[in-house]
Each structure stands twice: as C-alpha cells, then as structure tokens.
Image (cartoon, rainbow, N blue to C red):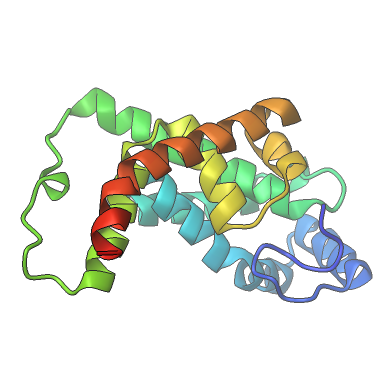
Length: 190
C-alpha cells in the first residue's frame, strides 16, 4: 500500500486516516463524508471505465458507497482504499452480469460515424472504445494500474488474485490496446 498518497494522489497522514476510519466504523457521518470526499473521484473513474456505460457507472458508484457505509464493520485494518475498490469491482461486475441477463443489446456507439469530430476527441473515443472491447478482467486490471496508479500488489488484493496474474492481466490488456490503437497512432503520425 502506498503510504504517502491515496489513489487521488493527495498526501495522507496515516495516523489521522486511521482515526477517521475508526470513527467511520462507529457510524460517524462526518468521517464517512471525509472518506467519500477522498475517494469519490477515483471510484467513479474506476466504475466508469469498468462498466463503460455512463448510467450504469453512476449506479455502480452510488451502490459502492451505500455498501461501504452498510458494511463498515467488515473493514479490517486501515486499508480502506483496497477495500473500497474491491466493493466497487464487485458492484460493477454484478451490474454488468444483471444487464447481460436482462438484455443483450447492440452497442451502436462502437459503430457510429466520427468523420467530423476533433482529432483529440476522436482519439479519446478510440481509446474508450478499445478499452470497452477488452474482457472485463483485463479491463479492470488495466484501469487499476494505468488509470488509478495502483501497484500490482494492490491490484491483486482488490481483484482477489495472485500478484503474478495481476501482472499478466495488465500486460495482456496493454498488448490488446496497442493492437486496437495501432492504426489510429499510425494515422496520427502521418
């Protein structure tokens, strides 16, 4: 675990954080708010990238913090960051599974015309599309590593896998992303 920063890169006083966590576990709403304010952006980004769909990401984000509060007694130690990302992962995957069960839909956003879009916006869209095409296990590992800046050990803890598998998933995700984006990179360098 990074001792100096959280996933949003703000310095953290470990002693103060431990006090806030204990107050949170006791049901202190102000402590919950402090933790929410510290992790909300990182958790939303993670949910957004993992589930791809904006509305589903908002649902996953909200459900993550609801479960965080409801299950506050389950938190062991002070590694709230890994615990919170683990909750966000489970919620997001459950929402994806439920969505797939209820209906399979054709994602037209992967096939719409982008002839008149600014090149930076176009590049961002291509990256998002390539990310959406990754299998969920690879996508979550890549997001945790390259977007959220987690170590391989933290990824292994969050996802519940061995550290070697975390490394493999990030590596494979990067290879697939590179393959999907190689034509765009080639076109931009012309």
